[in-house]
Image (cartoon, rainbow over all chains, first blue to last red; front, side, top):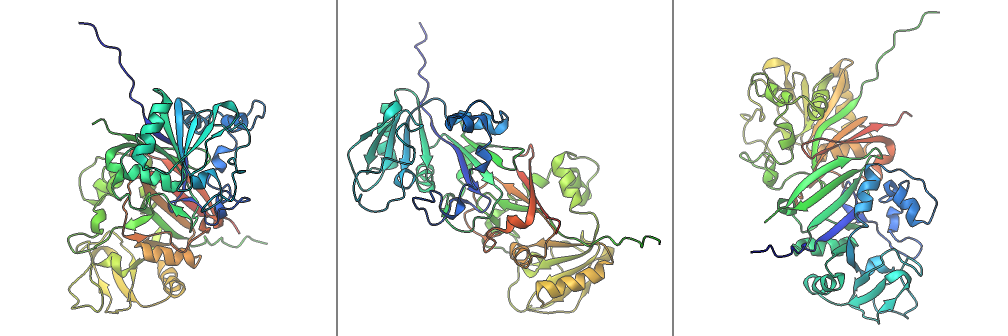
Length: 225
Length: 225
């Protein structure tokens, strides 16, 4: 009897997800000039000095390569598809006025995979440079995940936010790895990540690591079932 | 000219204050048999294996002496008075039915100083063994602090909880050191520590240390003014 080839299980992962110490994952008042509302860059500042940040900004070599960078990099490897909410894709609400908005990320977005944008307001798919195509779907977490897994061709699926989408995927028990970054600021208002998720930690092994920048990386890995 | 003797400034400190990752510092449904409501011991479990916990329980030597224990011990040193809320003192609400309740801690409570209990329902002071006397006060944070500082005779004042009292003292900008312990559980309901404190971190230097037990110690030290 020969061993059959092992198929790696596709994972659904959330990475580098900044949350204030009072539980908000984005601020109030998102707008074109304020993608994170009144939170500004405060939930993402820990990211900015790392080698990965330099690389994403097309800068030369440089940046720190410590614990923050190692964890950041894990959030950019091994994905074949991404799922995001419409509020992460852009600041508009309601029906699209036109289709000129192509996301925050310019002509060559940093995803390089199919990206499924959850929205009640559909529009045609949008093919960008570098392998990113935005698809717009009005679907349940389960259904859009099935499509994303198919498209990912054996690689993992990245659920990248915003908080409402991450919360919906956690509530539906679809997340294998959740890496939140607790930032010690009191944001006071915005969108809470944890609402309706009482006891969610029981499904996970939890590890915590602090970084010299003052944030805590809390990593929830789904328990083997 | 001789240097005048330096007077050490009295500090107001909060220590070992467990908060869930969604911002709750106590659960819902406090009762005689459930001092922390539905949270149970989950916000304090990190404490239980330390040498300080063994000592408080009157056990023999034993327990860990790592980062958790070092930080716990700092919260038991150098105090001359304590301030707590009535909900920390006991599970009763409203007027006292009688005066038989003497706190959760038995005849020799672990405070060994005057303890000011904030309540709208006054009763006579209660002298316990070991140097603890409970005084009941219906006063503002500023006024009870002035009395506690006087009683503390040069030592520091411990603001020990519950969350409402800590929040009131933070809102009134009376806290010099705040040591919170972020526990990676989603409590979902109870009393939030951070409500109304947007931006409070700006008054403090912040340090974060994770412990092997999976909690993060976040220490807010008031900036020199």
